Image (cartoon, each protein chain N blue to C red):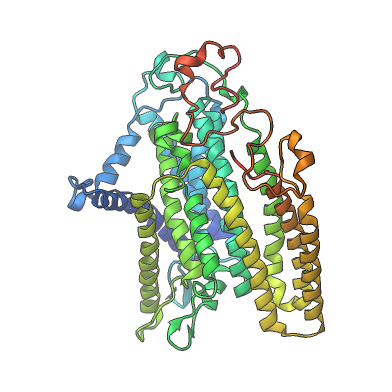
Length: 434
Length: 120
């Protein structure tokens, strides 16, 4: 590697960094303007043309704010959490190709920070680490609202990570690779000579699942339970101020851009598009423009969702993730594998072995199914038989409501009227409700 | 070979520098006038005793979710290498993974029926 090559690496890393940082700033402004329009308001419109410098003003203000560290915090973790969140947000976009390949002085410079064979596994790994920032931030604050917000959102994030990972697996099977550039390449060409051969068509169920999961992973409305303002003040970042708060904020909004970019890479052919006969660097630039346009479309959907949908309750959130999306994703993965193998190998003797295995497994499942009783009150056990109650009584005999469904009893009114008899044992919140 | 990781390393350095500097510099720039009320944990403006909420208990269901997550996430991890090599493994690969997925699906169905996924 000579110095020109090294310089090109530096340039493309800095380019990616600056583009993502700038687009995040623009997103914050654009979202405020758009949501304002949807709510028949004006939104920020004082600083600069259409108020675009409002973001800079807000950022500068945050930097000069007092950096308060509450008494009860675990100092090391409290300090590390926002840093983890923000750094991970920056590292996530490393594998996304966001433009064509430029050529300078005989050397190629793809608009992509890093293109390893494991490709999108990196994205999954980073979004898993992102959970740490939120969980640790909430835990280290030593305050009840951040703790509740942190626990809630880690459970939410890991629940939707499953559907996200499985719907991505279907795409990996379909394209036969994990590498981002290869996935983009596999989507070039057209169906029936006219429709671009993007994964969104053959993989449409995976696309829908992935899109929902990604909105939940980015903690955006209608899945923004971590910071349900009405119940949890600000969620995991309640005790943060100044630049530390700004880092959480940055990570959250950068996730919107990165997630949109991942959707575009997986399902909409990344930066590819009609070339208009251009070549070389001009084509690379055009592909960058295509990529920006596609990402903007999805960013708009993110904002649109925020403008139109109310927040889910926690019960519904978990039900959607575990009872609806997870089984669909599993079945879709199996189906995709089946179709791909069929295309590749066709029917031979082992095909019928597979059919036999699947049939046997299904049969076993059907025979075993009645034995998987749903939990019933002990007295009911004898007479019920078959174990197929439709309306299930509340689980367990303990009676305590385990989790706070966002609509009902608020966990936060411990200092309201009913503290007296609970005082000795409540640390933070009544234990049955926290 | 390690040169392959250079861009990632650079990005990590830039990101750490940006984030670290922001946090450190901002701590110096802002005013620093602590007082006991300001340093207390947020409680809607009410002064309360300092309690360590980290010692408090929370619902065991979160633990259950974490365990179930491990099961299905490990499944997903096994799926990725299989997804890439499926074309070369043919029906054998499909059958083996099919059995694995079906077994886990059975587990899932069991948990579902036992109410392990109910939140009310």
